Length: 219
Image 1 (spheres, rainbow, N blue to C red):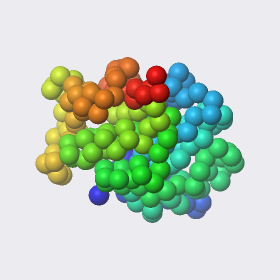
Image 2: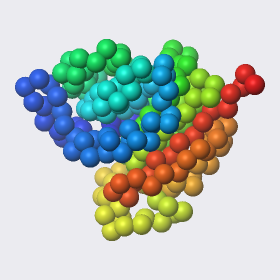
Image 3: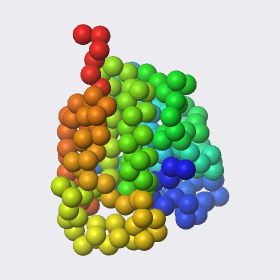
Image 4: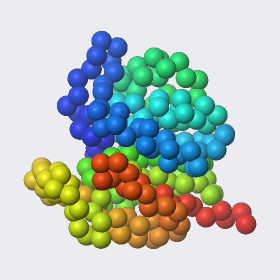
């Protein structure tokens, strides 16, 4: 299975069904600032591993002329996502869908997205699954569409803070196949799928945001 972001399995629900991830609350505004130049009016946006639903609702509020599709591998998250949707009253969010983004073939069912957003997921899954997600997401993008990946990464094979070192080691102890991915490796996996790197952005709390674009084959 492909994990949901930021350990949401341990989060409690309130009386409405909402779960709350502190990390999502901290980074949501910074991610919106990145999306300002990437999310035009009329865009179809897929969020992979929506988790609690905090990001989906925040993004949809920031970009009311775009349409958002939340997804998660675990339908147990949907109560939280729907609770946030109901509280917001926003009309531009579709009902969440079950999606194992690392499984081959899902773009045959849903595709044509102008933007795919993945937040705090890659360090929680194996290299094999990350590579598969990039391949499948590329197929699900419309020509000229972009993929945005946010989270903690190694820089050139190095962990650049004590906090990152401790978190990475804790993840590896939990499962040797997971842990921080290297930024250069992810960029290479983009290029192997004919995605063009557009931005590598330094983000708060020593995170990175990697943005790549699918070529417009209609030219």
